[in-house]
Image (tube, rainbow, N blue to C red; front, top):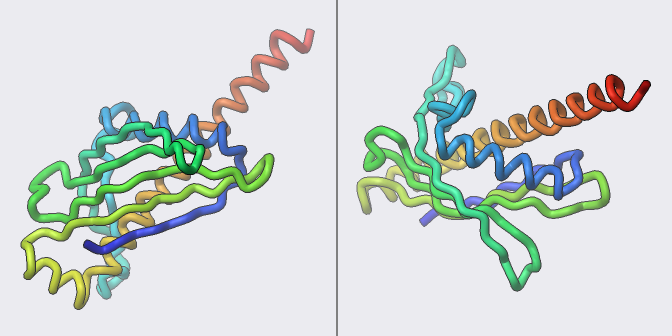
Length: 170
């Protein structure tokens, strides 16, 4: 099974980002609000085609918060599979987590493996041409989740500041 390990630096404290991450993943899993029909996607130019659009595959995500005793941290176990015809697409199993870099920065990590469909034939196709494509789709997934977390944190901060100005500023 191919292994994926992706890391991104974010400019938020780890506790704040973990809360947003957990909330976003729950919304994706429950297909709520703007996360309804959330999809993994690849730009057509990633497939060697003219850059005139993208391919999107709606997903079914399951997530569960776990404590990692050895590392004294928390992670969110995830499983991602296609919402329609899951037997035709790779299935990712792994975890997401946030590590503090300093007081105001964190590293978001996404680690796991994916199973390719069609047994040995699928493994052959993945090895000769599609390996980077599944990984690129997972990179895009993490970027989308981070963007959602950023928006959620900023909205929360704006709401707090509005409250402070309206009610505490008098």
